[in-house]
Image (cartoon, rainbow, N blue to C red; front, side, top):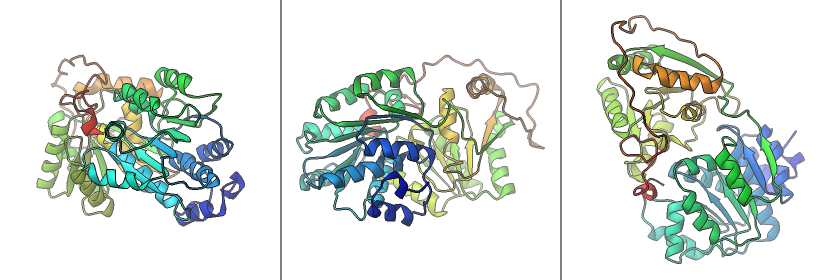
Length: 409
């Protein structure tokens, strides 16, 4: 199967080829014809399956077929985080390089006036986070009355982050007649309810079983005492000569502290989380991608939407409190058919979290004790305080509070 056989134009196929792709992924093979046919779409696909091209390519073709008007916005892509917004917009620009269409991206954490100027000049495709889009709508700098195609990308994460009220406000600004495309990592009950009120006779696509970890990711657990986790991480990076490692912590403070400790160990590291300015986050990601630093320490929210080619290693320095986040974390590696490794450093306090993850995956993860870092059998687990998943960020870094949500987006 080729992209040409899916009905894409020569201009789009040329842009796809320039990015080094010649064979559609399963989600692309099923989504592209459905979108080209004008159908609403409900698609579940894990990260790294090529879903961005699965909606971007047919969306651009449908806009091209209709002729560029420039203003108002003709296609709106809503995403939960700044990093994902930037990544999707980069794909729109790359795939649409041979088309007479204008695109823009708007998100919080940066100045709003340059975005206003861009929107006033008119765009065909707008990629946005919900909070900043509503800021523009409130100031009258964006016209959504002509939207022909609405895309909700990573809709499950938008629900988890509490954006449902913002989504409803945005939907009220859109014309009733439009094509709706909803992409999610899973078909959760919340997603099905959202889809029921949004989609009309949708094509339904599910290319991976619910909450299945990437098949090409090798997963291993290293039992270790909590106080020796940083020492073990530095040991593995040095011993295996890991050149590019994405490390997850639960909290923003923990991410900053770990990055600083690794730098003291002589390992180049940066931290990325919701308290960092957008400029700092962009610079840290650029340094990581270019190889200037070997380690990027991230919280779950900040890492959502990161697209790093051929990322070989993901490390769970701390296990997530919500088991589904483990799947999203390790999905950063093993993308687009490539192999990857996901390592979890697990102390006695995290055994319950590990059991939750294994119950979700439906299998036991292999344990490998690293020589010299054996856990102390006399150390008992501290009581785990019950916490409501997704109930506001506070210090956890896993979800923003309602008061601060727009700044995180």
